[in-house]
Image (cartoon, rainbow, N blue to C red; front, side):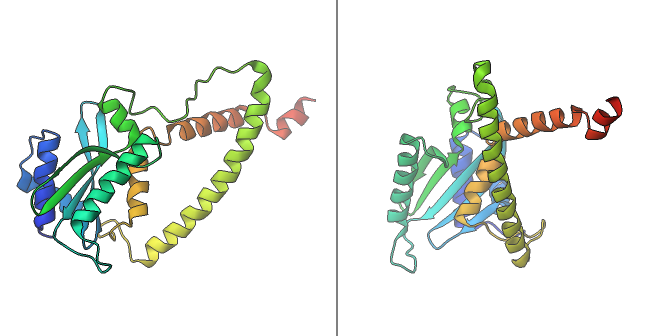
Length: 231
């Protein structure tokens, strides 16, 4: 395992303080190195899942080198400020993406702790971390049921076919990068956001619940052969 650098050590100390963790920062830094998902000139990103009062919770930890400059002339100070502003704007608009839990800075380093919208709602007592964005318990008039189900089923089929195609593309790219479970490549920012979304227990719960209900109903229906034999 790689030794923690200054960013990982700083991120571990920040994470331990922000979440009041009992772990020693030195040991936590080793864990963060193992879950580093992106390394850039200005910022390292770590994705970590921790036990909490609301159950397992996924977090992103961003560690910035405020004095560094990237190839385009952007410095870490500006990137740190811009990222916090972007995350705050997304939260204000209730847009998808990570939500800031805490942030801190020193003279040379900046840190941001973020989690999913559902986890933050549960963390702050505003909802259940396992609750999806779309409720499966909507009250509908019976007359509306068939049309809503038909429209939703057609859209689900289209989206699932598209998602399956994109999953194949991603898997091919992952394999081409020489990825394996023991030494996976670092994530892109888009992969980092996708990973956080999937680590959130509530993100795809409505989808999984709907598919389970549909498959259970499909298996319970008589087959055409059963219909013919009973006629």
